[in-house]
Image (cartoon, rainbow, N blue to C red):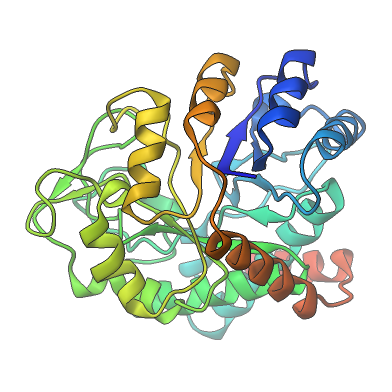
Amino acid sequence: MKPAIVGVSGLELTAEEAACLAEHRPVGVILFARNVHDPVQLGALVRSLRNVLPEHAPLMVDQEGGRVARLRPPHWRAHPAARAIGDLGGAASVRAAWLTGALIGVECAAAGFDVVAAPVLDVASPDGHDVIGDRAFADEPERVALLGRAFAEGLLAAGVQPVGKHAPGHGRARADSHVQMPVLDNVEAGDMLPFARNADLPWLMTAHVLYKSRDSEHPATQSRAIIDSVIRATGFDGVLVSDDLAMQALRGSPAERALAALAAGCDIALHCSGRIGDTRDMLDALADAPAATLARLAAARQRAAVGRLALDAHALAAERDGLMAS
């Protein structure tokens, strides 16, 4: 298997995409709003993907709640943004975070997803770009750590693998890495605290942010210094996936971006564009995933399997909606 998770172009898997996935065997696929219309269509797409992907290949989706949601009404529930949960305060916010994670997990698992790219563990900053904004639970690192933990535990209770993002912290960045490279002087202790407190999560995602005093040339995604000395130094030994390598903060071809991320210490190169030429060129350039990556993927899968509970989505939703209305 190739150490990459890739996007596909539309509501159905094309013959060209199916052939590419079958030949190159990426470890997984990520789906976006362009791939989702309704449960029947999505179920057919998931089955098509399962037919060509390796056994146990993770299917990933961005489903944070708020403005980052690929499964939306009328076919799926609307979920609050992280900041709305954090603003509840006290025990109510912790419970609402767990309930929201569990509800998102139940819906995503039923739709065929194994991995949800949430929770956001970035700490909000009044000077930071709105690309994070209300996706962050709070502007206090301890609160972010606590609520991110609760959200992740909710996902795990639904049998879904959470991905904490964007290590080592995107909240203070003043630029949107979808468009350009954000630059910060250093990684601050507050940035990393939520990631350190959640270092036992099965997955983390890197940030396309340049931290000048740590590595003046490479963003965290492509920086061996940051991955080894900051992210892995917390004790994190799970799957480290890059943020989307198609984002404009980065330079180079898809293959060059992926190879740089993997060389720096990412386990998985995430490339989301769904452009088949870019996908094929990147996968052509990659060697098979090393044993350590496969072991981390297996451990993440096992973590979600053993933590799964029998959940009543209607009861969870009623409780969560009551808390959010209080």
